[in-house]
Amino acid sequence: SQQGEEDPQALSIQEGENATMNCSYKTSINNLQWYRQNSGRGLVHLILIRSNEREKHSGRLRVTLDTSKKSSSLLITASRAADTASYFCATDLFGNEKLTFGTGTRLTIIP
Amino acid sequence: GAVVSQHPSRVICKSGTSVKIECRSLDFQATTMFWYRQFPKQSLMLMATSNEGSKATYEQGVEKDKFLINHASLTLSTLTVTSAHPEDSSFYICSARKNRGNTEAFFGQGTRLTVV
View 1 (cartoon, helix red, strand yellow):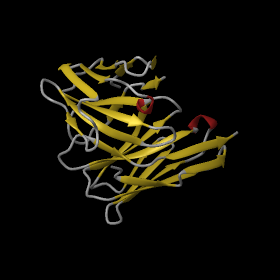
View 2: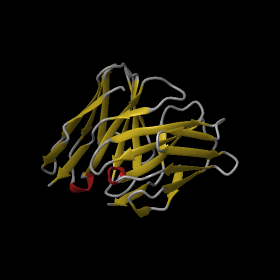
View 3: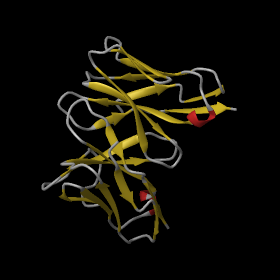
View 4: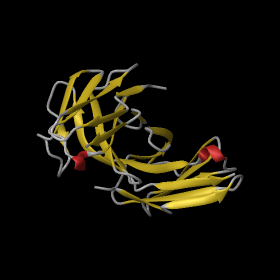
């Protein structure tokens, strides 16, 4: 079953603009992770944020986590055409190794 | 970073035949691996957790006899789709994590299965 839902389902923006994707989940978590998937390929880990963290940065990526609202956001700044991909949040429940993925956001960057 | 290799990347098989997909952790040992299924433009659905040296743990609704999982070593898990049907056509992805807790998962490249 899906732990998280993401919105928007699809997002198209101009190159250079910022892209924001949101993820909501249902149960308490140990950490939340964001992954990227190019079409027909495996997933690549982007960033992990622990339940006791509120914000994390990695290059052009900024992730926030609000455990009271059970939500997270991924911001990609100064988008590039190469950022075109699907982005998934995934939750890691306490004491459980498996990841449960959100519904994903398909991001298209228009050159 | 760690590497998980999945093979084959694409396979076409006839209805009624079986297909084996391999997932290898190349530079770390994985006592646990995970198998996901992904339909076009949809998210990943966990099928089963593969446990080295013991039986796999299947998610609700996944047929154990249909999707056979073997985790014979610390670096290899296999998923066999038995008596494949066209509705089994999908993208299958495996993943592994180096450690429990706050660590990332490493994914294979995925296998596109087409049953004709």
